[in-house]
Length: 152
Image (tube, rainbow, N blue to C red; front, side, top):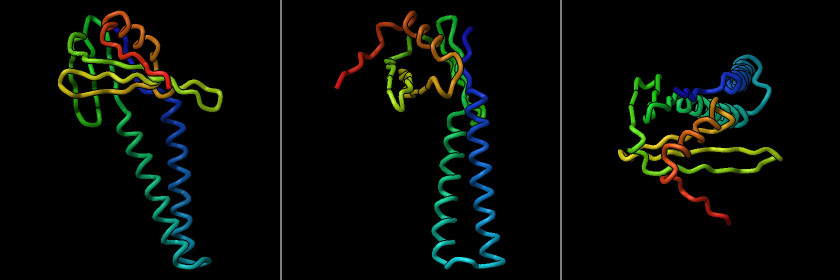
């Protein structure tokens, strides 16, 4: 059985960024309450922008927290924060595609798997462990369902 889970280092990094953003928000609100060093517009805009970034980061972290198990001709998707678990036989894989993007001289890979019940999951090599093993498993068990990449 092959278990694809979130990388701990990714969540540590995102948590540190989140902590810095929350500290900055607290500092700006404290400055507004006690000193009022800047105009009201600065506080309104800065707090709104920082709060939106914090919320987007939290949604990214919570939505990406999933465990995928592949093996024995099935794929099990578990979303612990939603209490969701679903077992898909490999025969229910409608299509899967691996995307490769080069950015800053680094290769980012993401595989998207679509199932017959119109659900899909995405797994990336920078956010999940055992990414290469999942792609190898899909190539072996569901090779005919692979979507051919288009070259632009």
